[in-house]
Each structure stands twice: as structure tokens, then as C-alpha cells.
Image (cartoon, rainbow, N blue to C red; front, side):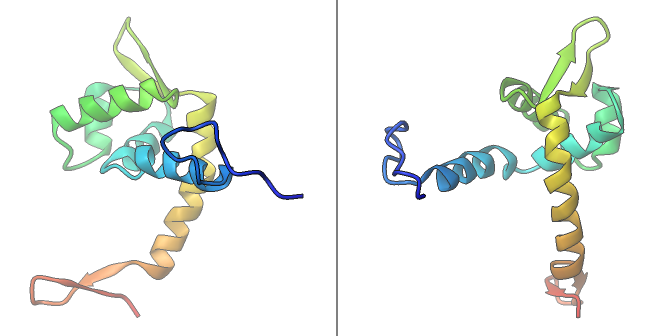
Amino acid sequence: MTNPPSSANPEHPELPPPVEALTHAFALLGRRWSGLVLAALAKGPAGFGEVRERVPGISDLMLADRLHELAAAGLLTRTPLRSSYALTPHGTAFLIPLAALAVWAEEHLMVTPTGTGGTSRRE
């Protein structure tokens, strides 16, 4: 049985549902820092400063933006009492493909400095 083309989304009426879902997932999770912010919360709930420490190199503004976007998407929640962030069940479910992606990246995309300012794939 084949899935009919998606007509529910007027932005992408020609995309079959799996492609439409991937398009949406990559639009959100493919943004810089998003995956790392979710991975940082895999260790458990954390305040803003704790998340920032778990994601080295992220600016306060970028972290605030990503936390807001991921919360709006339903992947994490913010408890106002201590400004603590935690993964929702949807965010926790993302840890499975995130772990698989990390293994794949280590095996296929790990880069080493070339000495010329660029990188090359590790062989």
C-alpha cells in the first residue's frame, strides 16, 4: 500500500508524508546547536547556566533562542520556578536517533586538522 501525496500542507503539496516529516525535522533539528542542546538535557533537567556549560561555545543569545524554539516545538519544557529545562517525552524519544547519528558521525564524518586551515575525513 502506498501513501497518497500530502495535500494537508499547502507549502509542500507534492511531498509524500515521510519526506514532509523529514523536511520538518531537519528544519528544526538541523539548526546549529539544536541537537547539542537536546543532548545536554539528556543528563537530566538543568538551568540555563548548566545547559550553557554542557554546550561549550554557545552564546547566551543563541542558547536562549534554541531553548525557546525547542520548547515551542514540544521537545523540552521550562519550569518557571528555577528556570530549569527538561526534555519532554518527545524530546527524550529524539535521543535514540541522536545516539545513532553520533555513532554514524564518529564512523564516517570525524575530521582531523589538515594543517592548512581545513579538515579532512579520518581514514
